[in-house]
Image (cartoon, helix red, strand yellow):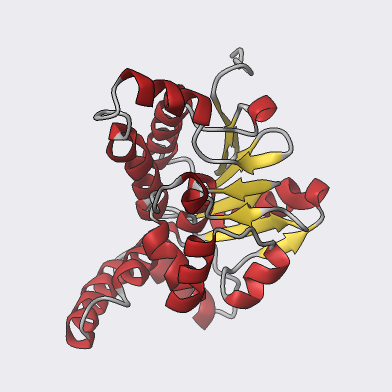
Length: 266
């Protein structure tokens, strides 16, 4: 099968791992409507693919994603300011929802600059690998806007409300070396090792209990907001579902036999 390497988003599959690449490297993966639509389609495709058990999200070239393409945005404002921000509900929100709710782990390979919606995408992923010294930032206040792409939720969850206010209101850039101690979890490696490190993590996850991961993602997403009694009930139901999987039954048998468990994601 011929792969169109000029497509706005590329999908590469290697056994149980799919790598989704934003493919506007010459524009630092600035987000056009075409790219956003293609990204939604790509994430939906790998989510629905039963043979894919872990996903890597990355960017072509030296940047992960610098957020909205402001040239296209300026044209949209000039054409009709009333509809220029429809893209938030139509594209940005579905992208973040797809990443956050995908029933399999997603690893962000943050290979370079990651600001605005790009940062929102990275924080919507489950795990992150950062290029050492990469530029991170919220960017919105610098152009007179507020958060989108889930940052008003994911950023304070990661770094706390006070620091999130600082990062959003002052709009200052920061680095992974600062972000990880603040609470934005992630591995930091040299830029030329980001893809390999993210793939190693994805391969490890792809060999794990996929259905249990999906339940864990769902519970962790709501865990800070639900009353304890409600959450305990949801945990019990989720645990029962996991308990009926072949992965759990096989793992218990392997433990009793002093063997290493293998997981099939079923």
